[in-house]
Image 1 (tube, helix red, strand yellow):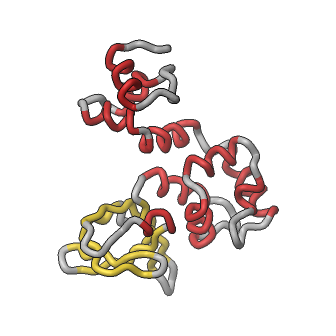
Image 2: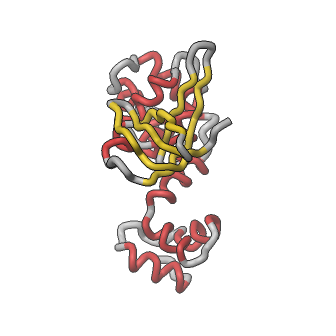
Length: 186
């Protein structure tokens, strides 16, 4: 199973890219937000979700591992295939999808082309019990600059998360890091 691909982008396609890895070009299908910021020649790494069928072998790529985790969660729902999951993740971030599941927000899913109200309700019903708070927290941590700053200072994931817990997220990054380092929680 392919879990991650790192290489140079040699072609940008309408729904993905071709990544050259040691002379072999892999077509990696991407969500719209992940694809838009890329340029030819970029060295990139993608977390990969494979979809292997009798007549097709597709690689779906995500810049953040949280995207891949949400993809797997969505495709575990009956009636939600890889294309539907990619459509959802092209329009909404993993953290927005997670919040919609927790808040029973059917409209977030049904706003995506190809996802009807019944499928949206099935996604929420199937994933509400399975989706753990850790996935939502993991997504928020990956996108949080203060969390990333603590990691770069040598903190482990759990220690950085604990250090930031209780610190006002409305403060600027520098102040949040300073308070986390001092152990002040306001």
